[in-house]
Image 1 (spheres, rainbow, N blue to C red):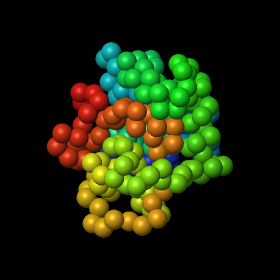
Image 2: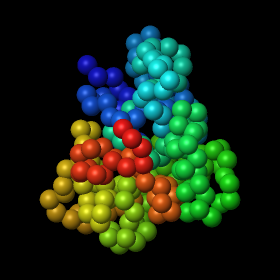
Image 3: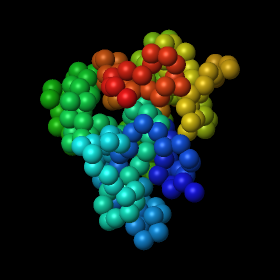
Image 4: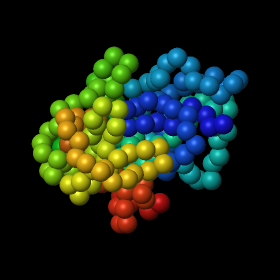
Length: 213
């Protein structure tokens, strides 16, 4: 039975079989004796995105009193939930994100805690996901951001929408009305400034960009 450690674009942590392309964490939020989540869903503002493989190291998932391993379908999903690339296991990627974030938000050379502080306010409304108005028409939204209608989330790619699921993306049959932005606004600004997130292969041929997977 899968552990409850898969993250949706809404930032919710669920138990589903697909693992996804990336891992990450929000601090220690599990009990290693039974590998279940505690009531808290974060213990730090540093919500990060990590590589599933790094220098041949292997971890027993939720097996110790260390950070709680979370998993994301792809980088776009993690960004929508309010995570950012890790400066330890993917420093170059994190630097690219920081530079795009700084350009998009007109913030010269921010430190990681600066970004974390802004994201923490943007991603949460109490304990729930904070939604934001669309910053423009759909066809002008940058590739890689996620939007929502109700409980359904969609990836924006090439001016069209792809419906998100834990297994991947599929074409949206109709254009939803009343869309809101799931991706935090400061990350949306980073996307608009040229940061290109890694997408799950189901987004379509040639859509996995930014890293070699």
